[in-house]
Length: 216
Ligand code: ADP
Ligand code: ZN
Image (cartoon, rainbow, N blue to C red):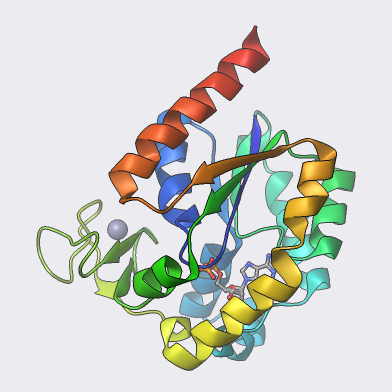
């Protein structure tokens, strides 16, 4: 099945999509992670997007759409996928609808305060890309990923100035997609305000129902 994980930066898309990928077996495709991997490896793509991403801006639709089209055409994405961080603009949503339409959009809702709290104090794993939080989701050993033992770091775009730009872009370019997906009948809203374990319990139930309704 094809799921889009939707929500503000800090709403929990990446955390929930990683859990869902483990449980349901669909590949977790995060455009942010693809870009960060390219920046880490210093590829031409990485060099191209570095300044934009660090300042909190959006990478161009042209580049992002091309990348996602290529990724979704890979063999592991045949049976389904979990897209995280795409689409973020109407152009991206229309492109996805044309080349590989989603079954459901999981909209993780969290208040502005919650989102800001989560972004400050967030730590990412350099190896597996999972996110943790110094207060809300601490690892057993500080600075080390519980999942893979990788080193944790603070994302450059989690600095206050970049967070502001990201939230503004979310409001002006991405949030309007809620209406777009409501009209398509694929929007499923899940409350993302609680701690990660509680949100996951609810989300897992929602996804199980959607998957079995499909099989029935
Ligand atoms: P978050 O959801 O916390 O903002 P992501 O890891 O999804 O973080 O994205 C990080 C950054 O990568 C974004 O701020 C943006 O610069 C870039 N990016 C990711 N996905 C897209 C996209 N679909 N379109 C344009 N830029 C993107
Ligand atoms: Zn890790």
